[in-house]
Amino acid sequence: VLADRVDRRKVMIWTELGWLTTALLVAALVVTGRLVAWHLLAVAVIFGSLVAAHIPARQALTAALVPKRDVTSAFAVHATLMGVMRIAAPQAAGVLLATFGASFCYVMQAAGYLWSVLHHSRVRTPVVESRRSDEGVWRNIAGGVRYAVGDRNLRGLLIMMVLFTVFVFPYTQFLPAIAKDVLNLGAPGFGLMMGAGGAGALLGSLATGLASGYRRQGALLMGAALGMALLVVLFGQSQLVWLSLLFLVGAGLCGGMLQVLTMSIMQSLVPDEYRGRMGSLDILIWGLMPLGTLPIGAVASVAGVPLAMSGAAGIGFVCLA
Image 1 (tube, rainbow, N blue to C red):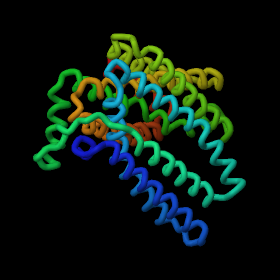
Image 2 (cartoon, rainbow, N blue to C red; image 1 turned 30 degrees about the vertical axis):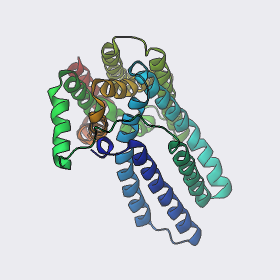
Image 3 (cartoon, one colour; image 1 turned 45 degrees about the vertical axis):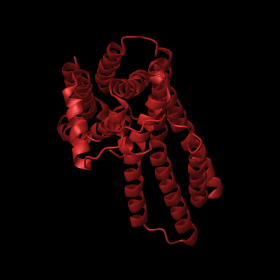
Image 4 (cartoon, rainbow, N blue to C red; image 1 turned 90 degrees about the horizontal axis):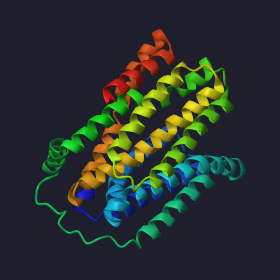
């Protein structure tokens, strides 16, 4: 609702200033030797709350800044850059941590947020003043849900996202168990598995950007969802390292395509006044993952992780189909 009622650029700037402040606070606590566990828990809660406000505003603003035909390309560029940073940033952070210490890392994080604030302040947003509403927040929330459920295309997209989040994507939570108990890999091997998935996601984002002119985006989305579900089934049954890595690359590729297409299709289907709330529904659905992770974990404790993971992804494949 916030992203649909106020200037989205300002929402992004204020949340980034919040992140900047928390990073400097943690740096100060590290330097003074006063950092304790509850400080980090409090920062995590604040950080997550700001993410919940930031991402819908960013998605909505991205969709509003570019012509409709370029929305998929814009989200593909965004996802590609995020993928590159997921690979490069932890490596850079490890070097900085070992060389200069934790406080320097947090100061550099704050500097990054400052750089972002300065550049976002220069963005010229489209003039859309019709977003303001005299209705209350709860009515705005209910109105967004009614709009999403009432539109046939959006309803189908949301159902697909729920199925995927609950049955297929929880496989990422069980990768450490697969690495240790099935493939007999140590920490370096687990890192290789994570890297394979990340590389696949990066390729998927790039592929989606190249296919942005393809008219049947919905068919491409379903192909990516079904492909990822099938690859997770096969990954769960693999006992060869090289084959497992190949399946992870494929699953990451389909997942990268899925992420970009979900955002771009959802934002393209709705008028500007609803874009913030649709982005919020996207985040809310991703938050349903424990509904799948917990029962899969319970089954895994009895039948083993490979069977539980493959079984859940197989159910997801059938439901998606």
